[in-house]
Image (cartoon, rainbow, N blue to C red):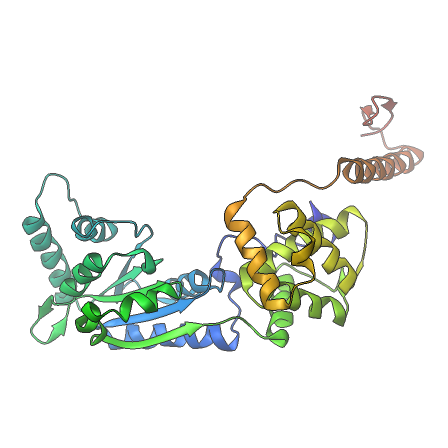
Length: 345
């Protein structure tokens, strides 16, 4: 809706992770480098953690796009709510193996044969486990056992464990000692700072053809950082609503007041209440995130604002049609939103 109004080629702040929008902040670039290092090592475990919405999945997808399929075969576990006995089966399925009707012993044999075949072809096997904090200790042990597969002194499987900070607590448990010994690198992806937050917003806008319309003044960028804590997903949510609100108001200059108004509306809709608005930045972010977890219902903008905007667009269209008519351009009849008949296309 607002994309056409501001001359953008697409949605700059979509919520789904998209590696084409990858922004190399200091933290995201470091996480990407750790993953690349892991691929180069070809063994053991790499652990990447970060808060909800920190951009972990985007980094992962950027890595997957960067891999050479002729040298590395990667598989990803999307659902980690699995019992230990189901984990090996899920790994085999992720690599495209047929698992129907075979027991665990046969399954392990099939998986080992597949991984050995890749090694013979000078290819590496990479398993990416997202949301790994949801794995049980027994499931973690199954992953460790899979890392025992070898051909000579060459490890057949490498695993990346990516998850929320709870993953670190899981790995600190006494019974995780053997797995910890196989972790070759780990990194915690934190939020962006104020300067990176501004760079992130501008990067995503420029990716879809932004030419400073709408223009953000310095206070607007400061407010975006304050309201989101520098976490990419929260920035995307806030800025998407901000551009929609500015479109409905036909604004071309955005200030801190605009950002704060939209942020207040989001919190009210999600049950944050007035207290959340005046909280300190970190606390405000926490309230905002908690409210999103418990209430996924977002009320639309006021009907009167949308109706007024559509009326203005309709009048503009009718004016254009009249100009075309004055130039003797034959046009079929159309009807306006009010139902009246209008000459032109």
